[in-house]
Image 1: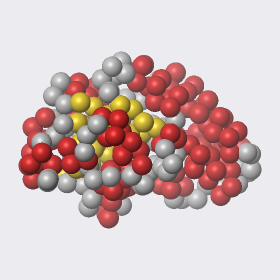
Image 2 (image 1 turned 90 degrees about the horizontal axis):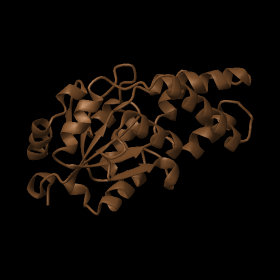
Image 3 (image 1 turned 90 degrees about the vertical axis):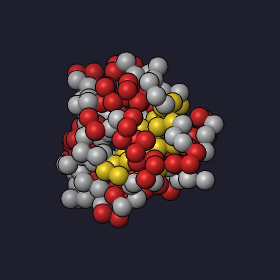
Amino acid sequence: MSTAERGVAAVVFDLDGVLIDSEPVWEQVRHDLVDEYGGRWPADAQTQLMGMNTQEWARYLSEDLGVGLPSDQVATVVIDRMAARYAQQLPLIPGADSALRRIAARWRLGLASSSPRRLIDSVLAAAGWDALFEATVSTEEVARGKPAPDVYQTVIGQLGLPATACVAIEDSSNGLRSAAAAGLLVIAVPRPRYPPAPDALARAATQLTSLDDLTVASIERTARQG
């Protein structure tokens, strides 16, 4: 049964790059750490890192990029620095609050994020969004990070819904691949600084320019066409 036939029952959001403009912050914090320990930061490092769970990216920085610290120490340092940056200023994407609240007024919400649980909870609390989501899952809580489907499968499992009744809102290549692999109908809202790969974008049913375009009507229209 298609999503259109079943009807949308829930919308699952990514966090980084969809609701908060955190990817530049992640890139700076990780790049600074690599520089501090004499590692190397290849041109595609941030693209490779997007979607990895905590264990995966900490190991990548430690082993592949030359930080050399134990991966659990790398994770602690990076997460501490991210928390400090968020405490100074939470980089909400324009239109995020309004989009979440209008979608929450119509459907149940889930969150499938590559951020660690500590940062997810602090962002949701600071933004006043914690009561909007029925299910939130970090990729550090599942076996594999994005592009594997694990995080989306876990969220919809917690919601008690089939993938065909759920829509995903994603921005990155690995996020788009993850949601599509889990069987959700995918709407892409890419960030211009980190455009997704063409093959990943092709997994989306539609692409929006900004969260201002994410409305009940646009989701219903996509579901009918999907």
